[in-house]
Length: 271
Ligand SMILES: NC(=O)c1ccc[n+]([C@@H]2O[C@H](COP(=O)([O-])OP(=O)(O)OC[C@H]3O[C@@H](n4cnc5c(N)ncnc54)[C@H](O)[C@@H]3O)[C@@H](O)[C@H]2O)c1
Figure 1 (cartoon, helix red, strand yellow):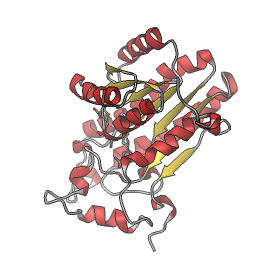
Figure 2 (cartoon, helix red, strand yellow; figure 1 turned 30 degrees about the vertical axis):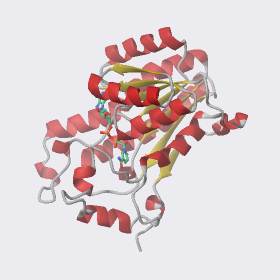
Figure 3 (tube, protein in one colour; figure 1 turned 180 degrees about the vertical axis):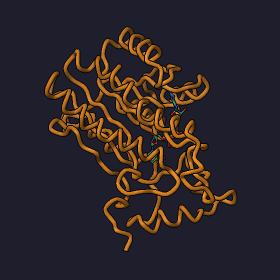
Figure 4 (cartoon, rainbow, N blue to C red; figure 1 turned 120 degrees about the vertical axis):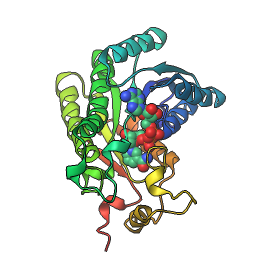
């Protein structure tokens, strides 16, 4: 591969690598010669994704770890450093909406339980901040690395039913910019921090609100498609190119950015 885009030999940590987007990104990176540590909450899901990496001829390890637990994150970092001696890439995909924090069409914001609001903001904001601190420190020490956070379309303009999730993802975006500044000014310009804002991709966490039991699109799906100039949902493999770019030397002057991968959703007024 062209040297500018060669990412082989790097070591990546994928939080939520047990899930849809994270699993797909893990497999893609492994196929491109990256050693991948898959982090997830259950052994079963971690093993499932690790199996796909091995099947694809890649190298990986699976670690059960809660992204909200600093002690578990630090233990994971130690395991990875003992095995591979370095961490070059962090992709923070752990997160998503939680059922209790997603308002039904009949509810208003005043029906939302504070406990659910706190849980969804904690997972989506601190669940990204804590891994950035733990794995980012290993990058700051060796003065190179690429952190990729995952934001959402819910930060660009309001999206109905998901207040806590939206607030947390907006926090992820400003933390991404803040950490990009901190890494470049205090450690090395070679530690870059960016975020991807995916449009709409069908995955385990959102399929119930997007797909009816009979397989047809829900009313919400139809609204999404109508505001997406490409007129379709994304395929999760369509995030791989942007992830690859951000991990490579081709992105050497790119830090603090939020890149939409959304079929045009965020740039279209809908009219
Ligand atoms: N699917 C979409 O259309 C879409 C759009 C925009 C943003 N996103 C974001 O992309 C990310 C991945 O979403 P997905 O669709 O793959 O969801 P997913 O539910 O398939 O994957 C998320 C993974 O994170 C893991 N996880 C949750 N809490 C954790 C914790 N405390 N510690 C460790 N792991 C934990 C889950 O077990 C799961 O495997 C999320 O941040 C989501 O908000 C998704």
